[in-house]
Length: 277
Picture 1 (cartoon, rainbow, N blue to C red):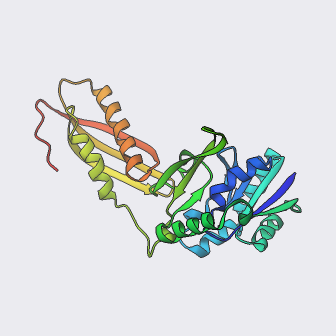
Picture 2 (cartoon, rainbow, N blue to C red):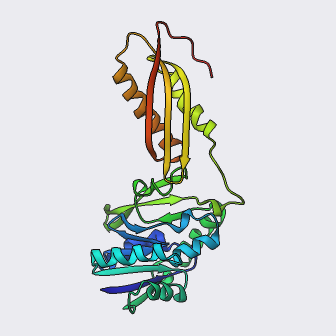
Picture 3 (cartoon, rainbow, N blue to C red):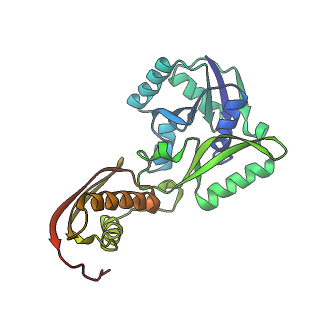
């Protein structure tokens, strides 16, 4: 198995360029911030970007936890990659990762200065400092479970092939971890209820939400609610429509991953009342 290190200071644009560097060096797997990535998919691990603090983030990136470390080692053994690109903020960090995961020696080391201009590195650092943006080189859908309720932006990666021609290399995601700010943020259950209730009462088939319960866990939302509906509509189709619309809005609202969503029809009214907000 070929092993290549990709080294650069935090916020210098490594993850932004990881897919391109891996492609250029014929490497089919990437290790970045606690994740093992293959062809735009998370194979194993957990993201350091989800840690509540910078210290916690470093521990995840260096595979301090035995269970986390063993899951990566097992995945490498099972998948048998032909080559891995290991990202790190220093030579010491990539060496430590190779040691704890028992990957062997590096074939070569690529530094961010080899693939990005000083201006590009400075712009990446400015974005990190001013906006708290971090890049993970996998599509947003791959991060839904780990980053439910976080702010996620999809970003397509292209490579110029010739004049006016571009090759789509893949998709990466921009995240804003809580440790990038001066404090944490939370999304209350009541804010979730307000979004759900608005979608319900604006539907002509629905009267109101009569009971609402939600559990916002690290891996996603669990919602259970009762509704009162308006007589004369196809109840099954109306519930399907409501469920699809609410899941879509929760995704748009804050990237929520909805694990379970139960809608129970508890009563009917013959005439819809004007909606109240």
